[in-house]
Image 1 (cartoon, helix red, strand yellow):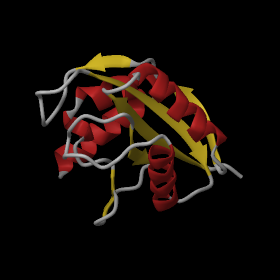
Image 2: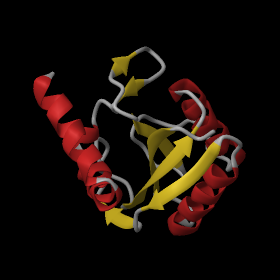
Image 3: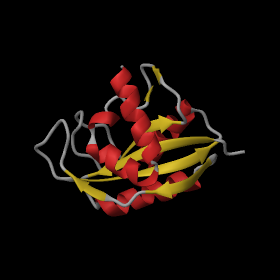
Length: 148
């Protein structure tokens, strides 16, 4: 039974980013325990953190899942690996990136995962596509950050 709602941000800026994001969305939808229930349009965004690299294509999906937040993270990492992502420099170029942005209205921080994503409130490339599919979640993330 698919119960929780998770929000996964997708990004890519090398290779064929729009194709890779569409493929990652399809892989999420096909992954056991997931059903993609909303997809944002892809948007072109400037790099964040490390700015001397190509622009990114970013998007957001809402998934209903019966997996817990760490299993969602593990699924995202498995999809990245299966699509050929290798670990590069922090905030550097990437062929695909999947980040757990929010999981229901849970708030927690561990070494492996923090939800909501610790930088989501400050990144338009996260908030803009999230607002397109779940404006209430975007507002909640900002409210959580302002209470911090």
